[in-house]
Image (tube, rainbow, N blue to C red; front, side, top):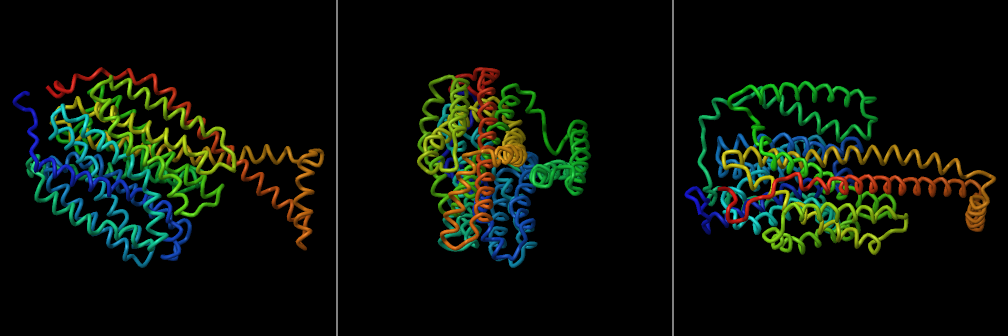
Length: 514
């Protein structure tokens, strides 16, 4: 062990557990409201356009804070940053629960996202700072599990809380644990010391441009698919804001001695490639966390609790696979693990290309298990390969960038998925509609059966049959658009699997970090 090898004490181990719990709350809150937006909408008398901002405001604020956290951690120290973030997250959670209007909810959700974003990169940085390389095969599965499990089980937890209690408990559930995390972080974290002199060199213009760049980008990716992209004036304005903010951000980052975001970590090949993989993992993680509930709600008509119970399988598979991934990480080439994980994910989405409108828990079981296992087998080597070779002085900034890439991957992935679902759904609907003509014997037979069934109940059989046929065609077109998206994800992950070996083989556990 070298002289600068980190010294792990029981106090630091407990502090890390406290931090992991805080990160779990912050990541969980990204998705916890997704299955319960209708309940919140009814409770606050919000319009469909307004309620989407409960999610969007959180994501925009969080994506700005995540890369900023590296500078703040160096200036304030991990202790003060994490404790302040946890305290603010807890207070804003309580304020969300007591909101009486949609405007209040959006404001407090933005604050919740911003402060929650300060906790996530701190945990990744701590894992690779306070633990010696020989312990990383234990620690990396833990943070990988939390980073993937929290958004996966979010709809399950949210659906259960809103169904059995009320939507207020989506936020009240954070209060007591949040107080515990705040106190634990303040009294236990001792990894580093603050450097308050950095405050004098804080780049306020850089912060403003970063907020415009990442906040604008997140808005465009969230709202663009549903508003026909540049055809919507507000989206077009935010595209301009994003471009100007991006240009100013990169100019200030590359020309200042003390930039608000340190990009130098990208000079490390493993970190650069690992961040690209983190981006792709974001597409797979958040994309399928969105697609499964959407299918179950729109095609199967499930409520939030039924959706939660169905998609819980993936989270259970991750939980079981985490110790296996940690065991393998110390014994096989991490690049091989990454290859297997990506191939497994591709196979899990390929299995979904046979989907029909009748698919239920039974048909979705194996793809969900395979998806959960593959996510863990991918996340552990990505964490170790990307962050395990960074020097200590690059770790805080690098951790922020690494997590930012995963979130941006999710945002880009959801934008592409929503656009594909809309465009391909319309295309399939037009093609199916063209096939239903008076010369199509099977279509006529189905219409006749439906008309006879409705007429026997004293209804207008002919009109009702046409309406039922149109609904059936629209449903089938929607299912076909889901299949197209699953095929696209299969090709993406299968194609990227072979690039796993672009990364350099890491040193053995005992020698990492020397």
